[in-house]
Amino acid sequence: MSEFLRACRREPTAFTPIWLMRQAGRYQPEYRALRARYGFIEMCKNSDVAAEVTILPVTQLGVDAAILFADILLILEPLGIGFEFTKDDGPRIAKPIRVAADVNAVAERIDPQESLGYVLDAVKKTRSGLPSGVPLIGFSGAPFTLASYVIEGGGSRDYMHTKKLMFSDPGAWNALMEKLTSAVVLYLNAQIKAGVQAVQVFDSWIGALSPADYQQYVQPHMKRLFAALDRSVPTIHFGTGNPALYPLMKAAGGDVIGIDFRCDLGTTWDALGDVALMGNLDPYSLLAPRAELEARAKRVLDGARQRPGHIFNLGHGLFPEASVEQVRALVDYVHAQSAR
Ligand code: CP3
Image (tube, rainbow, N blue to C red; front, side, top):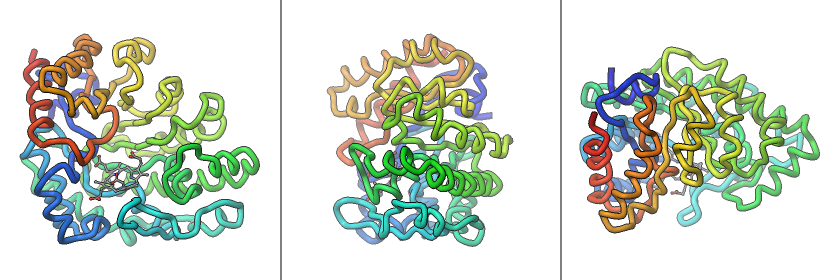
């Protein structure tokens, strides 16, 4: 079994495995060359290109796992929620969901094989192209993060419309969360059946909520989600923005909790106890001189104190201004420094 999968199961490893969120992206010259020829969604829907882009960071960086090249918004198409990628500001929802009637119009059920078959094809092609021993991670957006995206219609700083629906029409809110949760379960289980060896649920925007609101409006749906996932592969539950939510996320489910850089890994792990932990270097550490980057990576490794079950990652995704050389240096450093 790979070091990454061993760490997910909190078994001892020869070194700390590392992969990086958004390890396929515009910081790579090879990615930019493909992006000059294809639109982003076109790349996601072309399973040969998606597989090629998924595999590239494994050979280029030496990371210990690959993450499927796709986007959290692809699931919206079969749900009947239209969106488009604008040139500069990323995706826009055509008609944001704001009231109960909008929620009613969202599809009751998706058929991943029929509507997201290109993702499942990319899983199969990636598996056959990956070096043996390097696992493939599948993923989905979490219901809250998907819901806030479709309600706001795009990115948001305050999540005003999301909270307005949540606080004023909890029936409509829960109906939307139920539809999204059911779709995410079907989608992730289809990815597992197609061959992914772990799955990550990205609740990137969950930090907009207080612990009490998380418990009331989100946690029951997350419990149902994790309880319905195929248990044959490990699950990673990732969230950012509010470290006070991590104990509640752990209680909702996930073999591994993915944490951002706003908290200290060692003390967060002391508080969470018996769970594997993924994280949590501030991505912008990659812009520091090499010695400072290494000192910051060492601080993360030291916080883990050799506990089994640490997977090194950034606290959020890689960004276009990163350099391949510096990312590669981080991977090499983590491997060398953590060798036991
Ligand atoms: O680690 C991974 O590579 C997993 C795949 C993944 C992507 N985006 C690939 C991607 C995941 C989990 C996301 C998350 C995502 N995508 C969120 C949640 C917030 C977060 O950052 O975690 C949201 C709201 C989206 C929707 C989305 N997709 C936006 C807002 C953008 C444009 C802004 C940006 O960062 O480029 C995308 C495009 C996108 N998603 C790219 C990639 C590799 C870049 C596409 C390109 O221009 O080449």
